[in-house]
Image: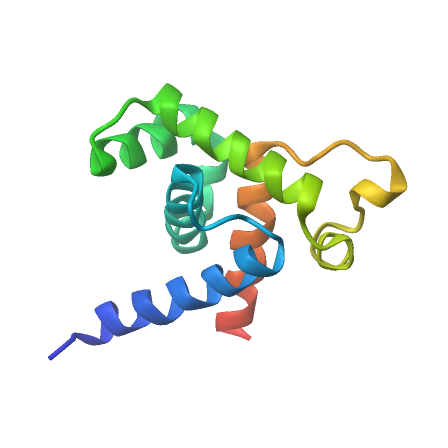
Length: 125
């Protein structure tokens, strides 16, 4: 039987996955899993947004037995692919802008922070 905390984490993960798929992050990329983990961790501790290179990437790298540089690169690639191929309306709804407006893609930390904040607000509201 799952604890309440485990159940909450599963529900949160499903919610994050829904947003990521709507934004067009391909599930077959390594960065997809790293990004989902980053958003999950950040939605539970927003302080991590200020320390992505010092805390977040190394934590994820440790969990997946890789380097923090590979985590950063894979996340950047996943975001780039979703920016190029994803749903512009979803980007506009979540970020207030999209590729269609000639804007540059959000940075890794902006992307992680925005979705983590949205998920956090969805669950506490």
